[in-house]
Image (tube, rainbow, N blue to C red):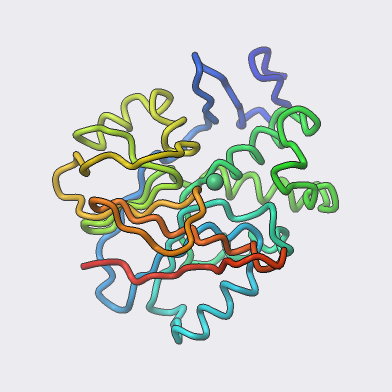
Length: 243
Ligand SMILES: [Mn+2]
């Protein structure tokens, strides 16, 4: 057992450094970079939160071609909605590319330190994982821990809550603990400009908005996919990535 985080998994750890929380594992990617898709289209969708029927409907509507098109996602793949257990099937595909959200972070913390009561509250819409078998949870944890915090596709950047106010991505790669709180949990106004040369748009989720909003290139696409299951207004937003 790890004396620092009490992990029972030799290759999975969850360490708190200063006020920041990070998972730490061999080979974890902070930033994943993709070339523009020359064969098909690239989309990005908002927080899915266990609404995989909604994602399937969007794919149909778009005539999404899994052989050529790609779907990126701002994270929060499970909790709150009705089909949280469906996430792993999508993580197994070669066309779905999410970043980690704060719900992935909470899941990892729960899974790694076996601390459901304190670290993974039912207020956050969890509970589904208690019905899953150990093997499923192990596979899911391994898939989730391998997700990057940031994806860059051409001049587009995808992050869960907000891009920290930095002037290069290397600043984040060199000290992710300093920025992980902003990346996963930030709420509030977006910065006045994108400070990284070559990045024109930042797609974010995490804070629900009634419609897609673009503020100085920070585009919030979390329109509350799970809300219609609670008789409130909301839907899963999917947009095509800008050139
Ligand atoms: Mn979130």
